[in-house]
Image (cartoon, rainbow, N blue to C red):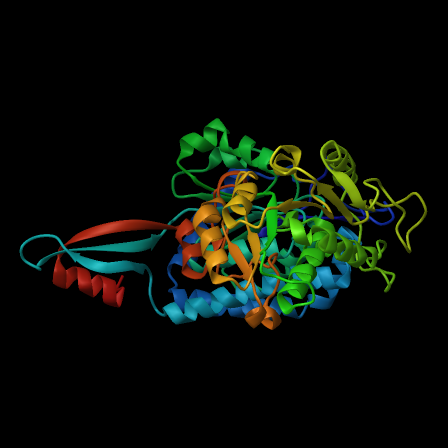
Length: 521
């Protein structure tokens, strides 16, 4: 059995005790063990600050961008091995493993190219200059200056590669050293991905550290120039937010948490049309991709009352074609849930939803997986429920089942009514809206835009280009209000702002415009 190692103080560290065991979610066979026992977290932070930070700060954006592009090239060479590890460690199908790994490579590449486009700069200009007095001589300008601390990244189990890639790309481009902590259950994939990055020596020593296992007292040691970026359950995010030492340190905290994302079908969309086909394809994929273990997965489906029966029948048929089992069997289209606890939570969650919704497809219980030993594995088939009165319901708007589970409900065709139903989820990472009616889209945006971080609009003219609502593109912000965590990641240069300080500078216009234009250090 493999023992995974942390990388701190410029070297690999192997723990001697306090191990957690990783298992193959298809067979429950033990495959690796993980522990951070013996790591000196204070020393690890200081090493990143004093060795990695200054080395990165000496470089401009273009230089760091070239490093990210080279890192993406190096990691791409390990793609096949990483896919195989993902099948073993997470139970993902080959398609889902590629989705994770290629997403990471795409994020690294995008931010590498962004660094080249920014050029030989050491800070960024924010907006236009401002005249501050009668004379234009007294001038003001806002600048973004990179922080001088450490970025601590705590990632979720469902995207061991992409979670690392999207966070690290932003921080490293800004010149901040990264300490990355993957989720334990999928650490086999994450450790291999980060190991390749560290062993490549593309970035200077101390720029990238890895913690496998617990974080110990790491968060207690952070300061006002440090950043924590967390992805995971809302309950864990709350415990981090309320850590007294973190709150008092002045360190920044960005949270991307689970959310009850919704798909809304417009009343103009008719069965058999291109927009209808996009809607069905997207929703079916968002239920089953990564076995529904995505923070962007569709959990609630709202359709006009007149279309309810047709949508129900077609979605049920689509889900019935899904084959749940061990992805080593080529006929399998959806793998297991990641852990025994995730399976238990899914069973309990569906039972809760069934208090106000009926089953349309699936059993809401564990099933045997094709190609897996009978009675073994954390398999849970695609499950669709229907709620007849979403206005009176509470569980469907409050409880997320982190698996291949969604609830279908009808609305009256009014955009504002649909927006209200979506907003009852308390804030989503993404809401997908399918309509070719511009007025309907505008009404929905006005009524419900504030309740979501991203509005994905599916329509006939872009049907062939749509990646699906669950794809977090590096050009657009990833995050959402309320329950979704209130954080922001990606979004091009907007993703860099988490790792920078906006500074207002005022004085002689000639000096300030020179600083804004040339970025001379």
